[in-house]
Image (cartoon, rainbow, N blue to C red; front, side):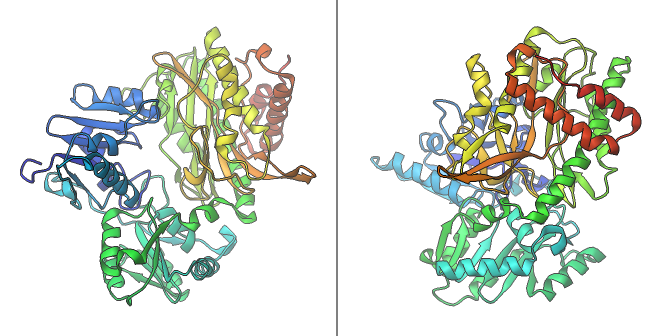
Length: 594
């Protein structure tokens, strides 16, 4: 910074494609700070280093930053000052790595700098320094390359040719010559391809250019020696469907070949700033039109093949989780020494037996006692806590399968619980049940029903800081938009076919944490003179422990839903389970008596 005259450097926690979970090469915030959470960005000045993250990671950040001199800046809380405003008030010359900053985020920083310097005689500079950390990160990992596989129309319900035709209709309707897809899940969905370039995410690092005549996939697959047979077969299949496979770094060359007036549509939230500069420099700024990728919404609305497969995925996944909970319950209560890490390994081993398993959908959260108060607790391999026969244990996990992506959280008693643990457990469960039973008119957004999951906690003056629900992909990312269920305003309505999580919680630092999570499918609920109505089908199939519920806190309607749900779990899973697990589940699903 001193050598280059920079007042501040902004370090992104993302990659050139706006990914939530970046490959090791782009874990820049972790390399600089030691913070391992999935959501975090940094600013470094001559006399300050700050990490910006949200409430899911406050406790984790304080622990990991202790003694580093790095200050925690809390986001999504009242009075929070974001990076653009903070930087504008503390620096004149700001350097960014434009490859790892989205076009939209850089524009926000520029806008804040312009506002702060508008009435000042001081000039500002916003400098794009791609891969700036290469100069000091000596052992920085390379861009990963993994095998590519393709999915058939019978697996996903729609061919890549049909999706490309749909994209071209979008271009013709809007008057564009091309669309550049930069979000990796958008690309994977469009081409029906999967890979493993990013841990837990079946994605391939690439760009996709779709014009009215051509489809070009810019990917690192053919320049790495001998590609594997699956990759060669996949590339040949893509070529047979008219897809040109080019080098990952050849995008600029392709853009340079376009004629004057070539109009291209991009998504500012996922296109990196360096790529935007390349496009606008080659085509002219007026020819680069930004908006929201149409793929995001289309991908979120699952078709009938995907819905049918997801139902099966949640049955298979539920059977694995039930076997895990049986093992945990019998092991801990028998006095066996079980650590959080050993529990996590056991759960993964049970999932891995499912045909079509392709890995976990995110890092298992296996948390006992006070560790569960960290919403995104990272279970350590060495020195993880022993699960004692008292209190609560929380597991949040999921699987990637050829026929779907799963995500489930269960908080279970492993022994005697306190009155406060029981009360919080019941209040959080009430919120999850209330959202599960929701009926709402077409056009309703997730932010408009988020209160259903919070109201039982709010009445007791308790709350949680994270969102209630996120979209879930189909053998894609476990976190998917554009819909969500949270307090922050998001105008996207919930639509039939959308799959969204339902996961309220409560976290008491140093004591315990509770979260109940099921996955919901939005579906049609009929029409009448008042409009079109929607409701939810619960896809998750795994019992909810009733032994620590405070019955007096449940309404009769909530108890009826819970009893009906647990009875359904036993009915659907018992035949898939070993005899001893099925017998245990039968006891666990006995009705709650008010």
